[in-house]
Length: 486
Image (cartoon, rainbow, N blue to C red):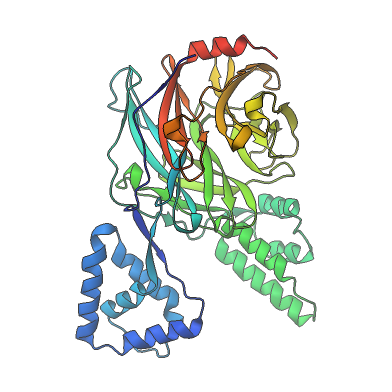
């Protein structure tokens, strides 16, 4: 089978930076920084701020606004209540701000879906959205985006990349469903008398401010009754709420400017390997979901985001005894009225799961185990299943000798995905000599492709460093899969 590689290489660009808080742990040091800025004369403040703005304003949108936000976040460390000029407040904010190069280390593990806006696209062409895992300083990963067009001949043209990376607005008080929140606490093993009292103070829906007030109120109750406080429960309740949030971009922000950066305690060390899928609802509407891995530096947490327009993203936790490990991939529609998901709970085999609730996954069944030498170490998916007349086409990854990652494929029955129709004996894509060197050598990996015309478009990462595209004739691939039935 012929796989055609393109000459497109999407490399990390260290010049793409965003601003983020520069936090100081030592409170005494924060007070000293305040004192030093307060000792400056007004003209010195103006000169220093102008130097800062001259050096950094061309690299960011809304930089002045962020400086003011940072000042408000640290102003409690001021030793006086004297009114400050806007310039002095901005200058103080700049001392608690830093740049972060979001893709200085790698830009990899791409996932491709069709763009929600196909207006103005030539006949036979389609506009796409490509998500990528970008990794920067400290190996912190985020989700970034590119866009482009695939024409009738399957030629791929990427849109120009803006020099800016813009952080979204976080919705300050998203509302939480009490029943769902309570069920999640139970699944996490943190439902107890303390949490019951907290939830008893809340309505059927509540926001973060109301939740914090309820937690503080119950803590005071416990103290007044001379009961020992369960701080772990308090932290768990608030951490769960913080892991469910929304971020919003404006239409003026180009696709390549948008980024989903770690925003909650579960994501402190990164959001990894988003597998996007365009999901077709039973009423004919569509939305996009992405399953991804949140990492707090010690534990991984499978999470899910949803969007209709790639401007507003809702991030939610996933729960249930089968929400484990990495590599969960949602089918693009319900099967017999239920959500379906591929997973890899044990880090070795591929499982199939069904659920009536997108956020809770209770059972699993084994679907595929490592069978061929190139996948003896580990078998997993490379994105959500793709629906074809022949069955559900799934790209897989296998790990073999010398921890070499290759991409394979298998085919599932449309009506009963637990039935494997066929799978490739040999890899579809393995790292060539030009693709073997990178952050993690000897790896090709994808988080999801699409069929366009007669071609399967496979975006893939090269050794966890950069990304490219490969194409193969989908009819030839389906014939090869059916020729090796299980």
